[in-house]
Image (cartoon, rainbow over all chains, first blue to last red; front, side):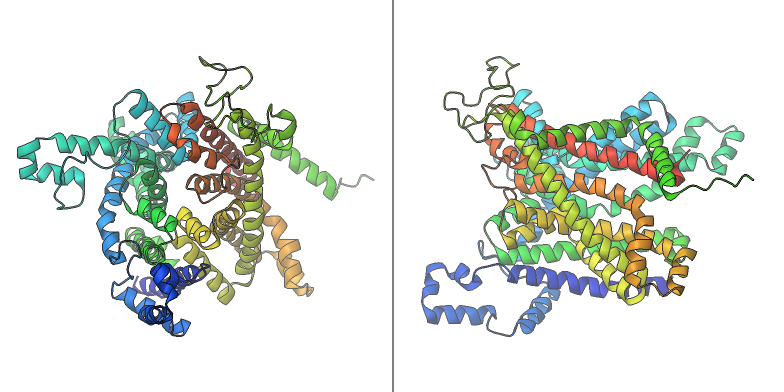
Length: 341
Length: 298
């Protein structure tokens, strides 16, 4: 077990170095002079220009620049945004809870709908209902979510008038940041509840529903398909037959004996979904003007705010690598067969 | 004397093809997928003859007309017009050409690079494999759209840059698929026989191993089309892919966002086209996997 762990950690080093090299050099390859970009018209003065260049460390050899980029990154310093002049890491963590709240809600939606649908499809294997559900899940899987979000807006916001079109909460409410999750903060802020009752909570919830559904659609399809195939595999096992032979109630066999074993691969896959959640966040947040990191990154790219792109990309990629390896470890702990890989 | 009948390679190929087709056509979903794709390929090939108007012609007196089957529609514009009076049907037909070309270019680039790297990694193993797989790890650490938008932001927005970015994102999938099946083939006797004869490694890789890895590769190619078209459209939607007035579906969607309340058909139609094409390739990929993978045969 320890050897497996060390081996995986050893593979991690070249990957992380590569990730940092890629985010460093990609941004260096951008045409245009970053000093001029920062200074604007003031850059015409050669003294000011030289001073700024030295401040940024751009006069040093490129390897030393990379070294100090990595050194600073390891100390949690990813540079400053050109637009807001605030540290990238601060901006990142200011927006991350919004993305996390959306992502968790989307995954919860996907699980609550997807797992039961997968079970039902497995139980009705080969029948109309199975084909219907699996066809539907393939449509969900093929969904361009940037279009799906707009369709949801047309139906639920524009036509039915049920939900707001964009944002996170009605701007008249001032929410204290305890956890950064508005659904929780609006419920536990005594002062706010005293003045406004549960209106802020309802507002936060109604803003959250559509983006969460839009973002959860593809994971929903993936989870439903996986649950179905995983359930089919488990249902053919000997211990299920034994349970039936013992005369256990059907419900108990399906929900306890089969489902619990079928869920293991599904949970692993969900751990690896973090990357696709970020992809989903970029598109969903752009459509719904959700103030998270996805919308922030797209805005930074449009504004050519390179420290933000570089830092944000490095941070997200590192996080994905670390999450993937933790999932591997957890899986190896649960399933000894995996340790040999 | 009756000699046992020996199948020539041609006959063998024909019987294999027939077997494949029998398995494929029993899958109704896959047939639907094939029909969707053929329909859009037909539109793409014969676009100029089929489209009723020039896709960039402005009809000043027909701004944001609804489709002809809705109230206020004009039979001259079957699917309505957009905010500057261009015929939506014609733009969708030309969009099919772009999307098919994008899908093809993405798959061509990523399948070529991915197959070569996957063959090398799987065949040589050891150091070569290690470093190619680290490259895959690095690329997979970036969420697909994020990597694509960073690449586009470096190279500048535009359709061809978007294609390159999406192709880079698609490479790891091909590398992994080819590598896995090469590793399964490598230890087989026919490879060892070639090696004993002193065949050049490149010859063995491309002429002996690769033809035996085609089944998973073909499936991945079909799925590569759907991912490629979807990601390129997403880049277009974010303003980083094809630039207006190009009639690319994702770009059309982005342009029509402002009219979501007043002219919902402008939003609905391009997205529906993306969905149908992507669904078609996913259905086809699923069907091919079932038909080509002997483990799943009943």
